[in-house]
Length: 172
Image (tube, rainbow, N blue to C red; front, side):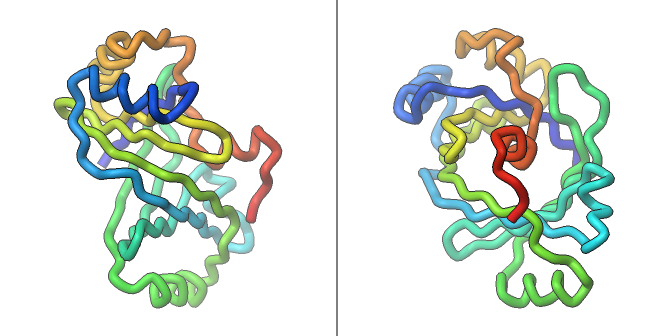
């Protein structure tokens, strides 16, 4: 599947939540804590290819996600994404390590998920600040961004790893 998304920095979670709900979005998943660990080979071939292999834990659920190299886009982060739910996080970690993969970056956040039409809107609370991550079709994203009163110059197409690295937080 192709993932198309942008992020928008918000001032605080409460006003961002209100703004999203006033846009007509509906709450899909209440606020939950997430731990995200990126894996790579010791050679850093995934990182060098701008790809990512992530193990995300949300409560008792765990997801393994591969993200391909970003495609060219001026405004949006566009990349292939494949995700599967994993039933046993410890065994998944053992499999990854047995394949020669090592944890290279770790970050945490609280995420609340909303839906607006065919858009997925995530309210992310991170140590970098509060962000809306909007995923879906380009035209729908632009319509929602305008509805939220956000200018296109405020759109962020970096992923969280890139944002943490820009802020001076290096690999795990």
